[in-house]
Length: 221
Length: 236
Image (tube, rainbow over all chains, first blue to last red; front, side, top):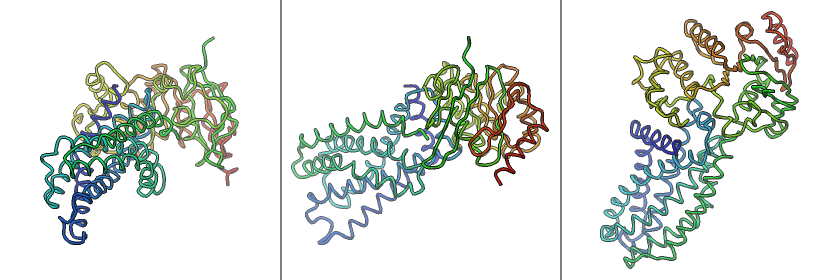
């Protein structure tokens, strides 16, 4: 638990000082939203309820990949990753600390992007803000579990920027299915799709457990 | 009978097809300073990282105080000071040490950080970001970080890299202090004369094997240098 809190504190403090990760993620997601806005046929508002959830989650996933890569590249500087691997603790706590920091930073970016997305595509997100926040939180939990684990794997490879999406995207299919379906249902009816939420809960639980246990081996050379 | 501080038995490490270390056997008692020398690519850093528990052996065993080097509890007895500092540049010197102390579960991280900063003469710059430190200052902070949990085995991997003469002299005194404290030291260095000066035992690695070992008596500088040069020539 000490390690979890220490890693979380260190990652958030580092990000607060540099703000490079959040700014990069935010700018990238904004670009994605702008590109979608201008590339959709028939204007931004045509059939938006059906396409918006997919577009929103594409922006979130791409932003998160950028963030996960940066979260571990800072550990390579001065070989700080070895310092973490040396700790006499279950390395799963390191994973939880880094994944939670990723979740907080991603959550901050997601909130701003959702607001801009709602404005640009003329979607009424405010009335469904609370259930949408729950769906985004559950989807992001899965994203951050898989992303943090595979960012630690990819960071020691030669092509880590390419390797991370190749490793994590196939595994994110159940998370994305659940997240997009739940978001679609919220936008179309204002109601939560409980089957989709269940899918999210189950995928999150599986990925969290596997990542917690697997992180011990990931940090080995 | 007390278990050796470090004992390697038929130790082997491969990276894919490449063999980094093979047939490594040695045992040193508590309080020994072991120098590991050898030409580039001999396997010195790999051996150190195996002892630290950062890598798992492909074959053989490596024990620290009678326990597998890879066990969690064993990692807590080891301090690692490398040519890379393990520091976070965005954090201040004090924050870097508080982070390490928290990770090791020390009861009062801030007090421990302050004590170490005072020991290393870094108290006046405690609130400066580590990223702005000179190489010498960063290395002193790295030493404090490596000793934050008061380890009884300290691993030093080319710790003089990039240090100027004054910083190197100060660091030499620090290593001698660690020896007087009775810590077991493993020093990887290209500086054979310095290694001979601080070591009670030495091994010369060549091509992943022990080419020559000096365990019975403190190694003589010229003898160690001769063995080192012979290993280097054999490589060419």
